[in-house]
Length: 396
Image (cartoon, rainbow, N blue to C red; front, side):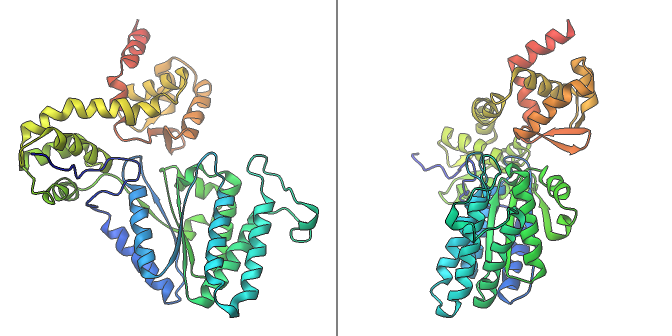
């Protein structure tokens, strides 16, 4: 049987059937309704490990916002793209759309000036102010939080007068520079105080909650927080079965339960495993044997791509640090235990902890405890020959 494959593993790829997260979708949809009615609301933060569907969720929320009549723009924080230039471009796009209303010309011009000042004020490489002579009257003192606040106030005022709310979606917030994150929080805080219909829906790794709290003490009151993880058993069952139903393929109950057991219900893993099972099976009913026959290929695929990409970003010493974490027995693990396994002092391994956090390989569950940002990464490490060679070395 020649059939299309309905599963879509990938970075932020929208599945053909989106299972779960209904409570968050309902709550955020309510925020859009409130903004459209002129009721101030809090911004939203969604956190979770890699592969739990954060990007899929915010893409879904963006589509709902646009359908409701909310202006939206999506930003992904990347190493080579600073946040300030991206948010300035998004704000400019909103004002250009609102510029069609003649009575708002003066307000929009003020907003455009604020955006120009923001763009001029920040050099992402040095963090320094750099203005040409003709622009110095526009921006007299370098203050990034105030500059971004001016932009948010300008577009917030337009949004309020036009009854056209604004929602910026910001993905991978954990990679934002400290000064940019602080400026964003300050700008949102002031916009929130003034009751403007402008919010941010952000997504990132679990360490994001601590980052926000460390940057501004009032951040915990500025956002509503949602931490997402694996799907419930019922949600995972739907994620497995519903895509296949579209092309008249079904699963035996035992096959479904086995897929959930192996993937732990993590959305990316479900998509990856089901894609492999589906492409290896010609029958219209997928049985337990079909699933078992695909297990080795599933792990080989993850190990060679999803896991390996992260593993190769680590130096040899950083790899040894992660090996010690995998050897701890249970996660999260204390850094003191990692140091003990490595036969070193805690102070001497702390720099590697910091580097792995910055690379997004591990995150701090609490001050002294660490976990991996990717589910089942410790199991991958224990499958690696490098790990076994290292383990034999420390035992000898």
